Image (tube, rainbow, N blue to C red; front, top):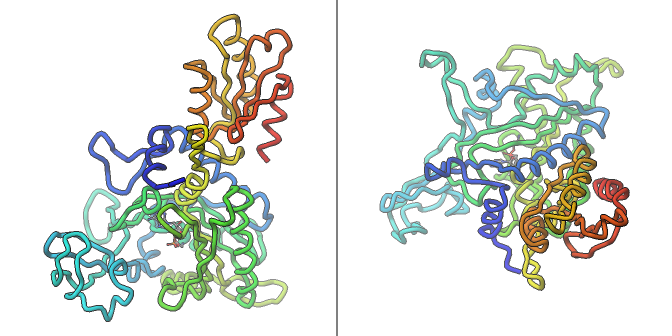
Amino acid sequence: MNKTIEKIVSLCKQRGFVYQSSEIYGGFGAVYDYGPLGVELKNNIASYWWREMTQIHENIVGLDSGILMHPKIWEASGHVGEFHDPLVDCKQCKSRYRADELSDDIENEKWDKIKCPKCGTTGMMTSPRQFNLMFKTQVGPVEESGSTAYLRPETAQGIYVNYQLVQGSTRMKIPFGIAQIGKAFRNEIIARNFIFRTREFEQMEMQYFVKPENDNEAMREWKKKRVNFYTETLGINEKNIRFHEHVEGELAHYAKEAWDIEYNFPFGWSEIEGIHNRTDFDLARHEEYSGKNLKYFDQVANERYLPYIIETSAGLNRMMLAVLSDAYWEDTENNRTVMKLHPKIAPIKAVICPLVKKDGLPEKARAIVDVLRPHFNILFDQQGSIGKRYYRQDEAGTPYGITVDHQTMEDNTVTLRHRDTQKQDRIAIDDILNIIQSSLV
Ligand code: GAP
């Protein structure tokens, strides 16, 4: 099967997972909207992440901080000074590239000898210039220097500046974590590969505060837990997941050690989550810039220290693209496309179909809908042939098809069709809820 990103983009649009933003105006670069199926899938993934962090771990709590924050936060974090991409321009055709796309050694590269990949001209490439990725905005009615604010490029800083308040109000002892899901914004220059790299996206970040000498142990623990989330919770094929360690030169300005979890996308292995040892870099910088003491008081050891932070930082949109890529299957034998989503994250759990629109079958099907609807998302569909109805739902990733036929009117049984195998069982109406619910764990 030739699984391409173009095929996934096309299915996402047709079935209502993801649309290009502002399409009627010709689109808006590197921003996407999530349609009825997409928003359900995205919410399901996010709620499993949230559950795994805050419900399963008694020492991790949640937070929802603002997108706009005090601008000094971004000076302290290093984003004003360091959050740059080096860019080069072709003076001939005006194409713009991230320098690392064209060279492995940006500093020593002879840029005037580089050939433009688009127009093929050699000798017209500029030297790299630094371009800050943060979006700036103005706060208040007057445009003046003091009113500049930034749209946050990561959710992490909202956690760091609130960490003492959270610790104080929950009385948690180190080690403890704070989890947050929210929007982040980056003025990406080269945005491509659909929802992989966009200007507006969602992060799911958890910051784990540990005693400095326990950082390596915490790093090991979280690497293991995070990789299990992809394979066990989301049901992604483990062959498509791997670690990549950041070597000298790749490490972000705040990190002592960093690992990416990568997924084997149709366009190649790429990062979906970063696990970073940020040491006490951020808290020390916030102490310096705010003038506030941010040390943690360890009552048992009777000492004060700045905790080290192990960060797990995942992109929700990238995670969703990994899930979609993994689920995409062309069943050539049966001439259909199937999204093999795990039932627990599938946007719709079952489609209920009366075989024909008469003889009381629609009413019987509606009665089943009424029983199931309070428990999970389902769909009633009586349009078109039964085969077409099933195939539409195969593309939507709906794991079950329930058909009400004439036999149903006699013995209160229905057919239950399984999406991947197309196998059909005859089951009692009273058993439907249990059967579907038991597949959602
Ligand atoms: N707080 C650390 C941090 O933000 P990062 O590696 O820059 O680290 C973490 O980003 C994750 O956020 C990435 O692994 C990716 O999943 C997601 N992400 C980053 N930039 C993105 C973008 N432009 N579009 C979509 N997701 C992005």
